[in-house]
Image (tube, rainbow, N blue to C red; front, side, top):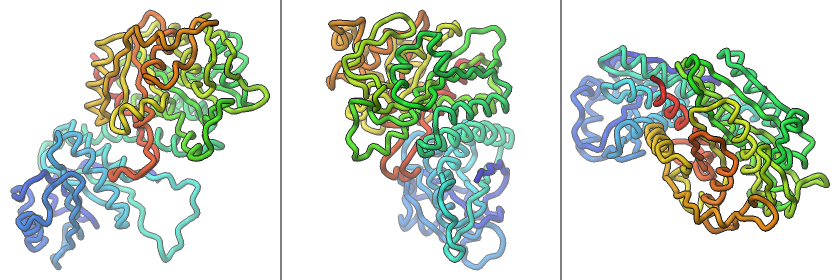
Amino acid sequence: MSLNLVARLGDPSAVRVPLLAVLLPQTTALPPALKKLDVRFGGQLSAACRRRDFRGRRDEQFVISRAGRAGGPVRLVLVGLGTEDRVPALRRAAAIAARAGKGMGAATMAVFAGPLSTVEAEAVTIGASLGAWEYADLKSPVPEEDRRDALTEVLVIAPTDGASLRAGVRSGSAIAAGYALARRLGMMPPNLCTPDFLADTARQIARTHNMKLTVLGRSELTALKAGAFLAVAQGTAQEPRLVALEHRGGGRQAPIVLVGKGLCFDTGGISIKPAAGMEWMKFDMCGAAGVLGAMEAIGRLGLPINVVGLIGATTNMPSGEAYKPGDVIRAMNGKTIEVINTDAEGRMVLADLLTYAIRFKPAAVVDAATLTGACVIALGHSATAVLGTDGDLAEELLSAASRAAEPGWRLPLWDSYRELITSDVADVKNSGGRAAGTITAAHFLASFIGEYPWAHLDIAGTAYSESDLGFIPKGPTGTPVGTFVEFVRGRVG
């Protein structure tokens, strides 16, 4: 069910909704803008702050019911912003507020955080959408006696500056739609989210936003001599898909190319993964989902810039036809790859995508992939690894990731690490072992780039979560949709 996000200028005490969420910083003083609301609720807000029942700490919640007065909101939920920077704090708190509203069965709710700039209103809008999102497509209806109203509308309220508020809600809604698409693709079971389904999703984006679409299959990839991509795909009966979406908003300027790994399911192939937890490998296409989500958002925003979204989609399966350790594969650019581990398959697909990107004569290429378990060991689930051959581009991406509340951390790409993927029989081997696994994977990718600035985002630890994060439930996070969009917006003009 889609969520309607609405900008509303006015006094929060007067909005007639079942639930009003008030986002407050860490303080014991009630802001003057909430005095009317405090009166309507019989002084409960000021009392909660004064007694420190509510302290405004990050993720803190405090629910208040109305004390008999007619009009205005029926219930309040106070949500703490903590002491973080205001924009990411607003996004997180709005997500928690929307989850609370959904849990209470509020069909409509409002969110108030005082005056909002365009950037702040956008953050609240995105956060509310992230918190309200769920994937219920395959669940049976809840019995009527247990059913609650679904949250279908969120009003973002500010007391002043309607132009900034409306602009922020409008752009936030566009980015939220990109997140929702990426998360839906990620959450879908792998028997439904197939390479063909990703191609069909790209087809719908192209039709809606007037983008050029290219979809290649096994025969076309064979003609292109995309041996690395095809090696991964040769173990599955499903047709592999290379998909390119072109948003042409910038005239003749060189495009940005966003590249995504789309392993719709990864068994590890012949180097098969352990059975326990293998179901999480449906999320191995989150790089591709992030690209498609970003292209949806970019199309809705109508950004005046040229962007290509490029994904490679297949499944990595063990079979009598599957590629195997010891094989030597020739990639699209002519380089040979010794296969050490068939579970290092994402980099094989990306190798040919990065070569394919040369034809667009790009201003920059950024790829995203759930590429290495080593990244989770190094950075946990709090940061995306950023690596690349262009320092300025890497720093630009780190800044974009920070603005998107999807923090990244740069890892070195020193030449000494490349020795770990030196092969005795080929130009390069596809795995250097456990040591510095995230870095050696990036070095492998660097063997296949063209003469363009390139950076790599390893989102293995940030694209999905195996536990509830509080502000969003377990499952796909939508990363790196926000990073991609902020990076592209940063290049406009």
